[in-house]
Image (cartoon, rainbow, N blue to C red; front, side, top):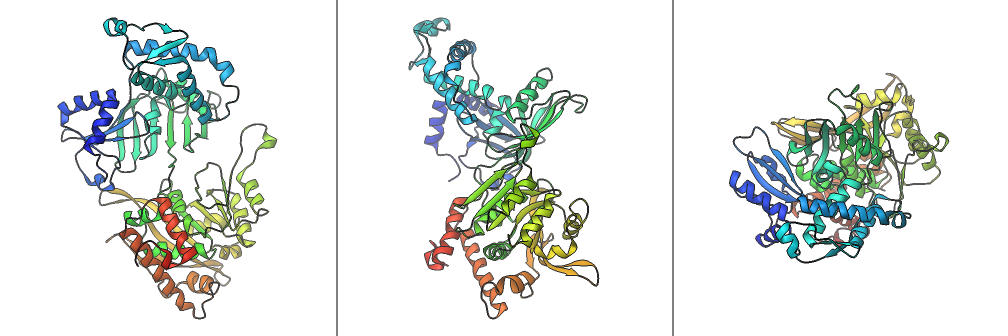
Length: 550
C-alpha cells in the first residue's frame, strides 16, 4: 500500500516537530495533506495535489497544486533551529573543532567523514529527555556539563542534520539530494530551484540561492566534486560521492545571472525492465528480443538525445546477460549498475599529474586484455568508438549508449570524423535501439521509437544495410514487431548459435520469453533485484523454477 497508515503518520508527526508545525500550517491553507510512503505513478495524472512523502532522515517533501496555482509546487520540509538551538550548535561546533585534529586523520571518504561527524557530535553532547528548568523558563543554553553540551534527542537530531548538510552535504540543496524521486536539479542564482521529478516532471521549489552568497556556494560545491571553479576556470564537471553528475558554470562573465548548476541525480536502485514495460517505454516483445540478444552475446547500442533514458534502459536490460558472465564497465561517471558477481567497474582518472590520467580509450584498450564476456562503456562520444568496434571485431560483445536520433545518424557519426570506423566494420554491431523523450498527449514520456538490425556493408551502394525490427506507433502508443518471422538478428545471428536446426524455431522461444515477461508485469514483479533473481532463476532452473504460474 502506497498511502501511509494513520499510525505511521502520527508517529512521524510526534517525532518530527518541524513536520508537525508545517502540516498544521498548510492544513489551514489548503486542507489536510495525504501522506505516502511510496508515490504511485498514477499521481502524475492528478491535476490538483496535496501530498507529503518522506525522504532519507528528517526531510519531507510537500507537493501541492490548488485551483489558484498555475503549476505544481515542491516544498522541502526540513528542520530549522531556534535561537537557543543555534547557540547550542555553535558550542557543539567549537568542541568538534577542538577534537577534529585527533579524530579525522584516518578519514578518506565522504561516508567516513559523515560517520566521524556523527561520532564527534555524540562525544560532545549529553542527552536529556527534556530541557532544563533554566532553559524552559529563560530559553538559555543551560551551560556545559563537563565538556559536553546538554541537548534533548530532538535537538540533537536537528543540529546533527544542519551540521552534516553544511559540512559534507549539499547545503541548501540537501533536501533534493535525499529525494529518490528526482532526476535533475537546476540552480540559477536568485531564482527558485527547479527540479525534474520522476512523477511530476518540472516543478518549482521553495529554495533559492542568494545572489551575494552564490559565488561562495558554487566554489564550495565544486570542491565536493573535486573540480574547483574560479574566475580563471569558470566551468567544472564532476561527480558527487553518490554518483550524481554535476555541471557548474561559475563566472558571471559566462553565466549572466550569476553562478548556475545542474545536477543529474544518480538512482541507487536501478529501474527494472518490468517497470519500463509497465510504463510503456518499450513492450514485452522488445524486451524478449533483447533477452535473446544479450543471452547470446550480441552487441547493442542504446541511442537517443540527452535525458531520453538511455542509461536507465541499459541498466534495466543488463540482467538479461547470464549471471556467470564477466562484465567490464568503463565510464567517466559511474552510472552503469551490473548485478553480476564478476563485475569489473572502472572509471577514468582526470585529477593529479597529467601523466597519471586515464581516459576512456585507455580503459577500453585494457578491456581487451581482461577477457570479459561483455564490454560496457557507459557512453561512447568520440575516438574511443574505434576501440569499441575493435572490441567487437575481436569477439567481445559491447553495450553502450550514444547520442544519435536515428540509425542513419549512428552510421554517419561512427564512419565520419573523428571516429572514422570503416564501413566494412559496421556489421560487428548487431542492434541499434533509438529512444527519445517526447510529448505525448501533453505529457513528457520516454519511448523506444525503433529497434534496428545491422545486416552489413553493401559494396554496390557503398552503404550499410539495416532493417527495422520494432517500430513505435504514435497514434495508439504501441510497439509493432515489423520483423516478425523476418528478423536478421534472430535468424542469422542467434538461431544458429543457439543450436536450432530450423531458424524459425527461434520465434517460439521469443514468444515464450515474451509470455514470461507479460506474466511478471501481471504479477507486479517490479523491484529491480527481484527481477534479476527471477530472470537468473530461469537461467539456472528453467520455467519450473519460477515462482509464478505461466
